[in-house]
Length: 494
Image 1 (cartoon, rainbow, N blue to C red):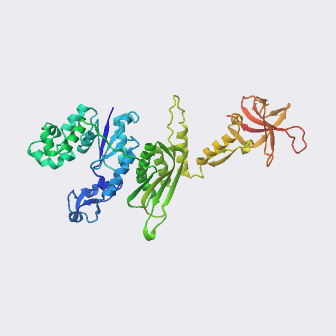
Image 2: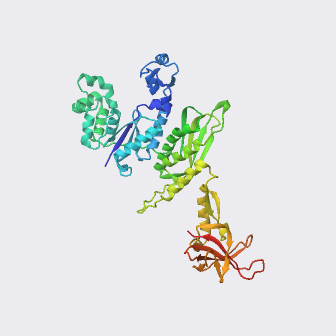
């Protein structure tokens, strides 16, 4: 199924200057000394499109006036396109602050066209933009529906009906002839298509017929798709100085959405992100505050990264005002798609568990969340140590590579005592609440000759209550002269 989504951003000039904070101030964007766009607060104060600068200052003396900056608008549109790459690799820029997406191959992945449209709208809201969205079987048809706010059309018959009701002057090549169309009573695209083609071409040119043919599916369309850069770095200049770190989350989320699109475009997963909080420039310049987040499990989704940043920003105290954000992805690797199990684990998969630990690290600090990491040592007391959880995984894999495979398969108790407990002997058998019966063959450990020598035979013992214990017998007599080897309890099985 071939399906296109058209997105028109009617408030792009305003949102370039005031992402996420436009509702908190009276902001006005001017072009040629006349109002081009205004925030909700400015509109409530009486500002209207086309009003002169003097009229705005008379109504709202405290209004913030900005000149339109086409370069910044283009950069903002490019940032939106980068974020949309997470839904399809076929995204292209169109006229008048709009984009086109070929999503036919993405419908099944995202659960259908309705679910996909909801996700796209949510992404645009997180980026700080208002969007008019439409779906159509043709790219030019999707653009016309989005530009005219005419909704969705999933089939060609529905598309033709909706296009026929749009204004005749809506296509760009038709706008210079809007007066002529009104004079002859041609007010809709349906009426425009019924005009004689040779005469329409002589009067309006071939470009108008080409647009109509493309919109109604009569000719093929070719586009230049947006190509993601080889490395990722995104910057956001904040509308005002920010004093509270948690107020930066909305801006950081918009940068994460751009990174998500970049990762999906290159089929990569990020293992480490760096968020730079830029402070004042000039004579009072300060070095940026760096938030370095190392992930235990590489990811390419923004939901988990947003939770991590929320925790980090919530516990951060800013030493100076923040005027800009920069996001970098210095460590990436090939994306490994998760496999769905027929019988999923009740506690979640391994990725879910690592994400929970990362949230604890972000909230409590890296030195306050520890995990046992195995070491390449045969002695049970020294077989592991407590390290920060984000380093435990690498140390565990390194230690497992150094140990022989047969050692890794040996049974070990769930609870290892901090200090072995000496056992009594009754009827030549170790005693711990009841006589213990050996339930396994011995495992001999001889190690530590360079520091703490150990020569022990370990057994799995069973008591009369059927509880299992991990006990060992010393192979060398004690230093007190007792010739009989002693028995010790070292661990308990669950």
